[in-house]
Each structure stands twice: as C-alpha cells, then as structure tokens.
Length: 72
View 1: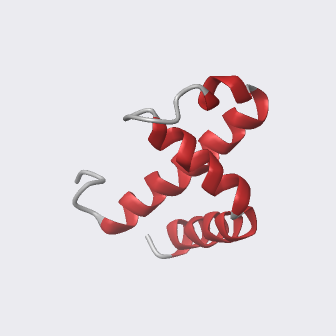
View 2: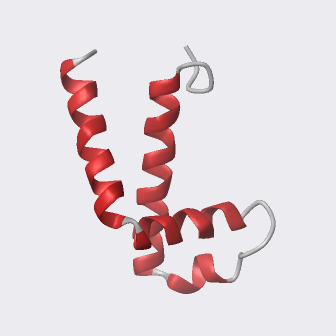
C-alpha cells in the first residue's frame, strides 16, 4: 500500500521530511535558504517548521515511533 493511501504512513513521511529538512538546514543553511519560492520552497518551509516547532515535532516523532512499534 502506498503512503498516499494510508494516512498513518503519510503522517510518518511528513514528519520525516520536516526532521530531515531541519537537520540539513542546521548543517548547510545556504542549501535551503536560496530556494524560498517554488516547489523547492516546500523544503525550506518544512525546515522552518522543524526549527520553530521542534518540541512538538519531536513529540510527534516519539508518538509515531511508539505507534509503529506497538500498534502495527
């Protein structure tokens, strides 16, 4: 089953994109800062979400891990 049709898998993909973009921006800020518009701007926005809402994103990652370990 594809992640597009399974809501839990879609949420996992979104959280992983946010965490990955925030991590990449912490290492190489110029890589994401030059693409603020267009399709690649989604990755810049994801990195901003990961930076500004990091306690909520980390809680979401923890809850996703628990749900994948024990609910599946």
